[in-house]
Length: 356
Length: 271
Image (cartoon, rainbow over all chains, first blue to last red):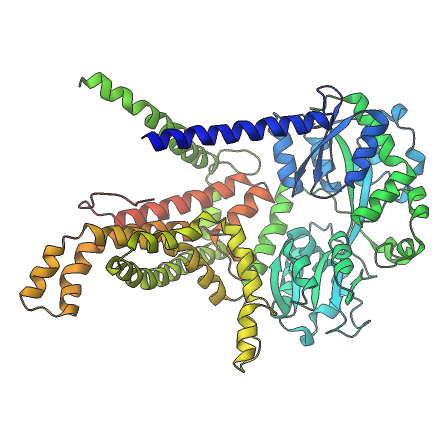
């Protein structure tokens, strides 16, 4: 009994000490009550040096919380009880949040650098006139291959993946919309189609890919590709950038016949509380030097035209991540589909997964 | 002690039961009657029972859970029996329990390292001259890792049952001329059966809804109901359908409990 009591007492003491040190550390980094900004972002999706710089310049301390899927973020904001000032949804999720009345409109009069952005990434179908969102990063869906096992240049199009040469060699990203979209694009169809016959045909085509599929996984693709576990993968450009940085044998291809163009955006949830900090941050991140620094850290493509010119030549001319005009024209942004259509995509995708 | 006092003691447990067991289950059952448009309906159930995909997935889940339980049992019984004979049993038992202190995700990632193309397992296969094989993303590796993770939960109840067994029975059996095998077959095993049943419950039920391992180790080549539930709650946000599958799983678990339940059992699962 005595030992139990002393155990409990020492546990409490350790907790108290940790809480105290944590509090002290936070106080020394200057997070005071009102001068804060609560940013709800994807993991490792902003250069931490920029956050320090922002605090130095403006005095606002940025608290970052992270999420790992658009849906998880949506659920959390929708259920309330959060006080995020800014969030970073992908394009289809912006439309969904807008419809659910979860967003505050942007006050354009307070944005000083809107002209820095490339018009290609503004005024998209998911948010006409950018009433609610500011583009943060953009990217594509494509194919990563390892030149140790695959002859460079032999994979250029989606249909190349169906070759019998690649039996049990391809890793797919576990995402219904992207994999169904890949099959649709390979058939020359729109990645936003809602026609059940077209979708069923796409699923049939995917089933024929099944023998080539080694695994359908998520974040782990990065690790596997870096370690040469598989020679080919289908994944997003941002993930590809990270793999390429860690393994010189890897290459990224965006099929010129069409693929997905995704845009992650900064939005202000209804629950935001620190308006001044929000606009200070949006303007800070729109500055070319900051956007360029962030793009170099994260490795994704920046929608900020002026920032792009500041990037090293090798980066901004890299066809892998800033594809040429023809390919760019064939890219499609996902529309936010109705729940029943999303369900259809997912049911068919699940059937495909059951197939192998 | 008055009756009122005993009633007071029940309050914490009663509250816990109501808030964290009854309320969530009731919510899941309630949710399962709503379709995407939030209409009260039975469509989710009719979809489930008419869909070849879901039925096949259910079959898959039950089959893999069965295999995992079978292999866990085959390894755990002899292990528990052996540990029980040893001198420093508490120490050996601690070694069995130790892996459960480590997060399941970490263990899964460790196995990825072991099973990958350049991993330890393949290095060994190359060393003995077989050459590297595809180990990850196979059904066998999935069952292997799941079995590894479940083993402690099977060993513990069996060990406790062996511990409860009065050695006088074993001695009597031997005195009366039974061979070691006969003693085991007719005395030890029947008397420790409750432990085995408790172990089966502790292993089979969680195995039905494994989903992280199906992706990490199975590469989504093994699809169980857990995968479908995850997808319905996180991707399609069709909570109704997700709940329906949840209800099916709950019913399946109740069936397992009833089949393995034993009125004579004194303790429960020692967890």
